[in-house]
Length: 456
Image (cartoon, rainbow, N blue to C red; front, side, top):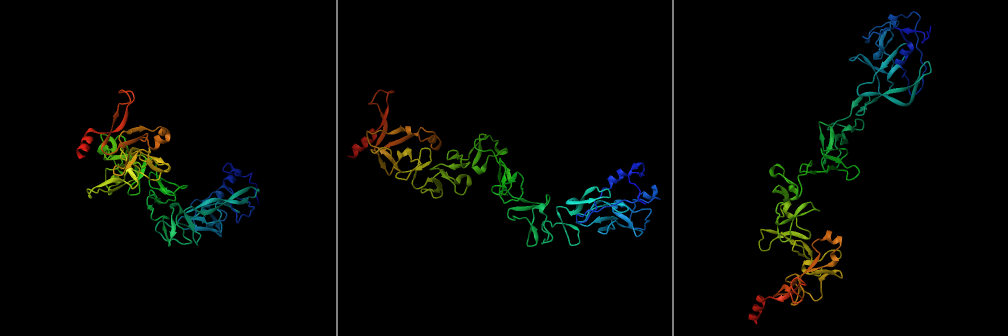
């Protein structure tokens, strides 16, 4: 005889509360099932008590002595799994659902049972699958599924995915959480030349500058949307071991000698507690290259990184007079300036480039020519020279007053002219008193004139 579930009390607690603790989650393939709970008229409190020492032993249908919390039920006078799709574990004395089968709270025709999932599996909520109880209440269904890093084998068990160096195939996949892929039936990192497997993290980690999937060496990040490589963070650089290390103090930064070395990769050395070029008399710091470079005409060393780079348009070549030494020499078509840099020389094609203003050259009609047609180019001096009586020295160039000139060539605000052979550039006071209008003109030097007269 069925007994009203709302009128029956168990240990002073209404069965309606007990019913909520045993929510129905029993279903198969998404179909709904109507279930009822039957209690006989002659049931007593002792009959309802569950024996928590349940195992696969003989039981009494009336006493209900099997451990329901372990998924057991008294069937054929033996404690068995409540449903045929469950597997009994002898060691744990517990019933487990197979992968893909319902799990959680079950309400049977006589008793309620709790069904757990096997090892490496979890009980997850399924989509659009429900079950109804005897009161037409609707509940969502949970089923056993392998956890993220496990896969289902042919026996319906959840087995851990293959680790680094282990075998893999179409069935046994590599652990995706470790970023591994299956290469010739062995789990390896996808970028073997750029990565190493961190046994502590159990991840594939990329070196600085190497291709990456997610994880990089410390102080670097994977540039997913750019180069696809690990880039060192700000104020860090790649070292010889492809790791990211702090960048040492840069040019003109304070330093403490042996305790705080300057950036040697930039050719810097700690001089009087300031980071300066290793050879300040022969080098200049190039802010675009972020390193010290050799000045034109000065010594260089092609075998040393910090000394082998020369100023723009110059190269480190063997010195003609001393083959054992090297100097920074301007390339063909360029000549040196007083600032020991290289600028375009006579008759070289020019557009936006500067001709060597220190040699009296200007960009005229697309080529480097003497600034004034009365000047003549002296091949031996590699400069435009003025004749005796003509202006010389530094002549201000008003066309160079723009900001572009100040940025591109700040020292090119004037033209410079030397004098022809046997003459010198001296002040000419014939135009006025000292301090009024001074001019420099090429004049035959007394010493030069005496030499000239003796020769004649």
